Image (cartoon, rainbow, N blue to C red):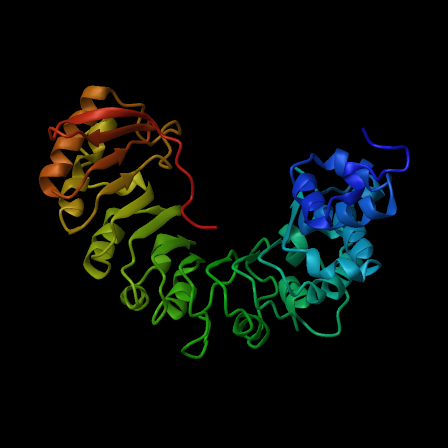
Length: 391
């Protein structure tokens, strides 16, 4: 039995062991532990600040809701705790507008300034998300005309960053990205593997050899066409309109150093002609997720789910397609297809498989997933729980 003067088990545990214990604790418990002792405070603070996830909802009601106060408070706290800079590995910040709120009433300048002050110090970041919502819709005082994202990332260097999401709401006439800031930021990300640019609609001119590990990208067709050539991107998600995908930028998407296997077109309404072009220029695609623009399907004389019969001739152009996910296609709005029956879907699976022999999985707008079993028979696997292939 321990004597009254013997040290407790907790007191002799190394900080690494305490950290492993604290990592599994809920946020309120960690906050409580910061008040137990100086040692617990030091360890718990590092765990608390290792992954920062903030969501600010902006409204034009109370003053407290007119600015991203959670983000501002976190930035001020970090600036006053420089010993925690090296502990921060993930920063995910999202700003959203409350329903009906007017961005003209938001006050963002101070928060953007503090965010741009704190972020450059976090040189050990592994994951970064800056989804600044209405920030580009708000007039803020700044000596240079810069996109809000550029104000924050200018001068940042993150040699360990593997995942990055950048963007704000976009509308015609808002401040575009300038030429140097974003490319200079990307130049300093040698470990980056996953990149999402939500509102950058132009080409990015980067020297060869930059982003040598990039494997997934989500963004506009023009941005993708400038980034993918010469890089090991195997998964691509495009945003915008399907008319943004042209015969000029589509061929460049095939110039990756590894086969482009996953293609997500759920952020645009896709016409069959685009699918045919994809099959022509991206023959290595194995998995595709699409939201069909059904008003442009090929058989207007058909009704219900049989509208999709016209896809057979398009799917026949794919050489390696194994998975076809149509679950994002709207099924309840007037003018689109109603919910289908199992008989209808089975008939389409068989018809599409005859046109595209490599096809093995189909998810319909009804969310029903079909697959080929070991005997070569199409059967229902279950209900779909699909998610985006990109970060």
